[in-house]
Image (cartoon, rainbow, N blue to C red; front, side, top):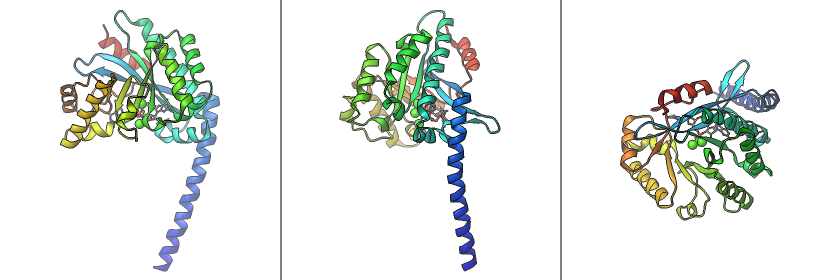
Length: 280
Ligand code: C2E
Ligand code: CA
Ligand code: CA
Ligand code: CA
């Protein structure tokens, strides 16, 4: 038994070593990926729950790794944030998402073309020059500010981040919208929501997941939708996978949804093709 314990310890040490090494390697590889521009964007439709009509697209980054293929953001965003690489990566995302959205805007026949929703990280928004970067992206792409939504995860909602709120408020003044992402997973108090300069609230997938099986979760989602509407916020339900979720959400008065029920994240050409089938 003693021998086995020792073996386990060695294995544990080896794993630990590997984890550290991987993190360093990951960082170095990510560094190179930034230099080489080895990223691509997927676009997931956000639809009107009632009709299925396109309302917008969320831009989701993928790392195109030479040997490993497409790496999802869950595997590298954290390292990107810790290392500060999220700033150049975020800039890349912003410029590319706006340029591609401007393309589907130009193709649009009539009515309002779908907006583009871009994820921005804590570190990126805190970086001086963030607002400037958004202005430059809009000017370079020709995308109208009203067609841009910035998604900020709820955990960023720190009261004392004055510069962040100032920048966001200034961007809202020119028509850019701000969405609170993953709502329900952070700690923002309900009264605090009143003071947040936001336009859209995205209900986290974990609530939608359990909604059809749990009465309590259903009541929670219902309360969130009502609260959001009282505060004048638009609601997007994330992770809509089942027709029954859609029915429940509609009954609650939630207008917009996103999830595998409608579409997975699509490559840009596939997103354009998806639009052609559904657009006006
Ligand atoms: P998120 O912002 O909550 O994005 C939604 C995630 O849920 C996406 O994962 C999407 O593919 C996935 N999803 C969509 N519909 C469904 C569904 O019906 N069921 C399930 N199970 N999943 C669904 P993805 O693309 O892997 O992105 C993960 C996270 O990485 C995002 O979560 C976001 O926080 C972050 N992220 C993605 N792109 C960027 C980016 O450009 N910048 C930053 N800072 N973060 C990003
Ligand atoms: Ca998001
Ligand atoms: Ca989310
Ligand atoms: Ca998330």
